[in-house]
Amino acid sequence: MNLSAGLQKLALALRRLFIVLLLIPGLQPALAADGMAQPMGDPVVEARVNKLAEELRCLTCMGQSIADSQSSFSSDMKREIRNMIKAGKNDKEIIGFMVQRYGDFVLYRPPVKSTTWLLWGGPFLLLILSLVFLLAKLRKRRGQAATELTETEHQAAVQLLGKREGDRP
Image 1 (tube, rainbow, N blue to C red):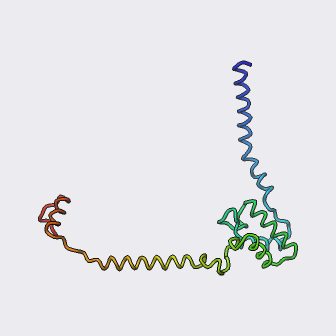
Image 2 (cartoon, rainbow, N blue to C red; image 1 turned 90 degrees about the vertical axis):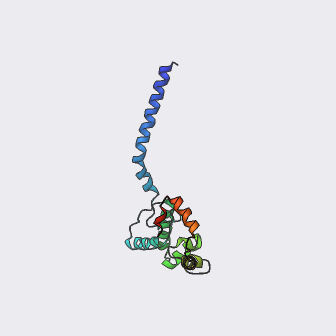
Image 3 (cartoon, rainbow, N blue to C red; image 1 turned 180 degrees about the vertical axis):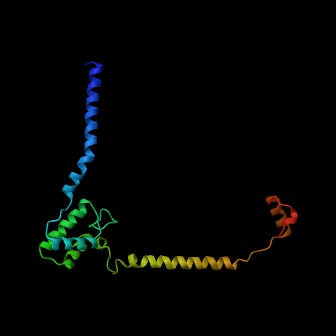
């Protein structure tokens, strides 16, 4: 096989690769829609799913509720909620199941209990400690009196600053 035939095959392969790469962004929405939990039709069930989804955190996205998230994890959680609603469970039972399965972190408003007291009280504790530290620094600064320079210190400062000797305030 000669060099030009090899280059032609390489060029053809690169064109095909380029075409495939151009088509991939167009296929992504179709592929993503497959994994998303689609509403099943009953508006009452969907309203409850959405209400519960707003109260639960997506553990993949961390900063979003499962109602706002587009991750496959949140789709699975919504599907699970939908199945439990259809099975006749109430909202408290569904939330309890999610907490049992994923822990208190799955809730946007975790309950105050022994395992979450630092989560609730930590910011206030840090604020109080910061204020105490600030007050201590201010008192220490106030306690330090400004001392007058001696004549030799003043002469040295004048030399360093390059000012005339008669400029002393």
